[in-house]
Image 1 (cartoon, rainbow, N blue to C red):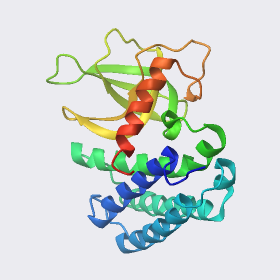
Image 2: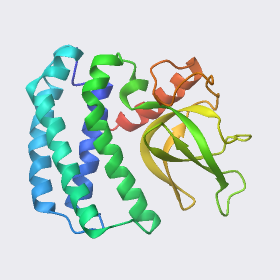
Image 3: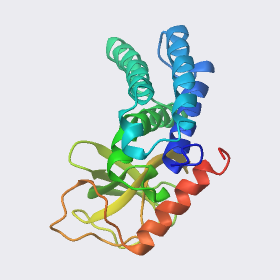
Length: 232
């Protein structure tokens, strides 16, 4: 396996870059142990180098010591953030604060799910990020927009905010989505993106899915390739 060019590894590299940028520039509006977090991420960067140039097969890479230590390092960074947020009862207020918090969560999720993607998802770039079946629980128009709708969706354990221009959506509809770097869309932060706008069968349970229509796969793949094109 050419780990140096594998999309799962490159998306992980991009996620670590995002974490470093947030920490190095102290973008979070909460008191954090930034020096400690920076040191942990520096060590994670060294581990990433070992992972990226290991040239082992996916399942072996998932079990490699460097991979486990890298995932653990990101978990430590996430724990520092979680403890600080809890201690201060911090809640992001501005759109920028919400976006930075969402980007931090996205990057942590990419790292935490990296071993699973190596074991279960194959080498299709589409599955280098989490693909979820989500159920729409609430819809509201985006203020100032004629075409955008803010959807609150659940994957069974987390509520996602997804901004879309797909028309005709209703509460209770299940759709596939890709968890992508958050985007500010007219003052509302979208944390994921619906794929192809094709409703899923009612029997499909919310959560991670690994079977998609061709059009949904193509769309997810395009988004992933857009993330990693600067990493190659």
